[in-house]
Amino acid sequence: MRKYIVFLSVLTVFIYVMVLTGCDEESVSAVDTCGACHDASTEILALQIQWEASTHATGDAFERSSANCAGCHTSEGFREMLAMGGEPPSEAIDEGIDNPTPPNCRTCHQIHSNYDDTDYALTIETPVTIRLSGEVVDFGKGNICAMCHQPRVREPVLTVGGDDVEITSRRWGPHHSTQAAILAGTGGYEVPGSVPYVKQFVHKTLIDDSCVTCHMATAFGDKIGGHTMKMAHDSDTVNVSGCVFCHADIETFDLNGTQTEIAGLLDELKALLIANNLIDNSGLAVPGIRSSDETGSLFNYLLILEDGSLGVHNPRYSRAILQNSIEALR
Image (cartoon, rainbow, N blue to C red; front, side, top):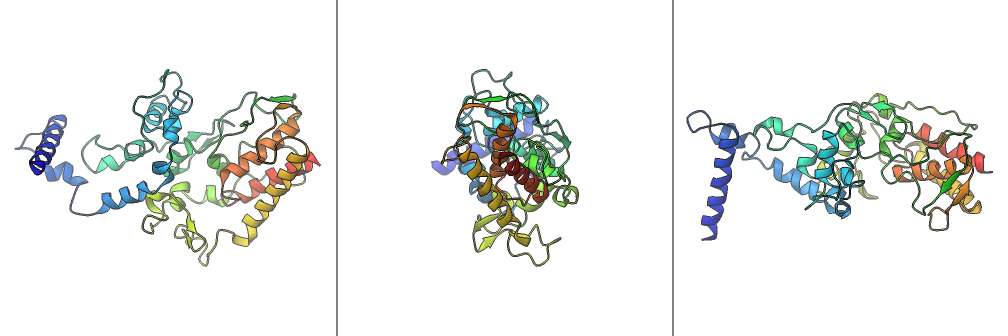
């Protein structure tokens, strides 16, 4: 009985596809529609297994489906955000999303739009605006990542040498996932200091598909690469297959000691922020009214910390942001 029910379900889906595509048995076969993707290979299964190990699939953040969060925390909100030209879907989602789902195949791909291999096409490949700075960037296939992996705009907007700023929440800051801004070399509080702000870096200018090139390089099971989008599983398993084209002998992400240097600058800046009562020992902001340079230095610390790459995405910009913030607080 169970096999019979499964057979009927599959048959129903097939008939539904034929109706949607305007096909009949004389003009097209399943091979020409479903078979374009659902063939005898294991490709789709492999991608699903990788995705299931990703943070997109395993995190519970998709429960945050309110108007302000749904655009990046849910698949439905993301598609709505695309429909609104990249703006958070607060106007379209008044009371949150019913039955939200995490980012999945249909978030990034045109699944079951044409019922052929064009269903693998990305939902967006056009340039993206970094909302914090207004700069338009083109990361190729990585544009879909940049839609969400960027700082959110905070009010009031910080201006170098501007008015004092009131910090009203211990969670104040650029929010998580600031990678696109760091990669583009934009969005920081660029207080003057001894290190010049060199925004351009080869990871932006020479890698056509940016995020995708490195994070989705050849998969190693469900541990790194592919649709896991992970760069490392443990200290012995790192995803350098997307790096070797430029760095032939790379074995660690701490190339030329960059990560060690940026980690040291983060620690130094954190100590100054604690000493100036801008954050507590746990790293959370201390509410109060502070000067623009103080607030900007806190913002910069969180901007680089939440990037998570310890300078790999853009070492020059990360170094300038941190060192000049340290000097501003001394």
